[in-house]
Length: 183
Image (cartoon, rainbow, N blue to C red; front, side):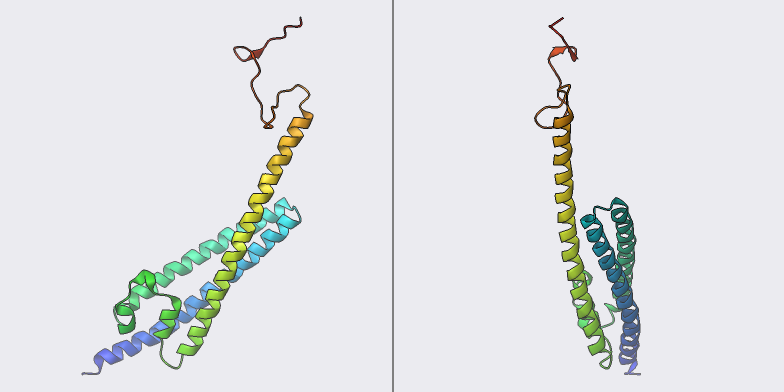
């Protein structure tokens, strides 16, 4: 019965490989969906297509919920194997990466799992960069539109109700009512 701990670890490693395989597939699909929706968002911004922007944002929200579900599953997998595998036992669960999990898989599955974890990391970095770029473009577009609206307001304000900042400014008078001294 001295082999029992080794058998448990072997079973845990096999279980880990199956769980990690499913986990990686979920993350890959979720990040691919985020990537697609961010690209659609960027294209809709370029085309000034508000309906396209709205649709892309809805897809992004759905994809981000899928990513959150994958991360919850990752935490569950970690909770199940951290105490059973010596190479993970000394690490804080928050510090354990998917690559660490891949390295704890059985030797014959380890290279494939490590490769998938590395590819997923690259995809996640690309998505993060695209998201940051699209966010910056959105903020720039919103600032530009606000400036245009202020300019239109100044140009169309025949009554003089808009000030230099493009916002309605109070005029001199009693109780907020303008006095017409010419009459």
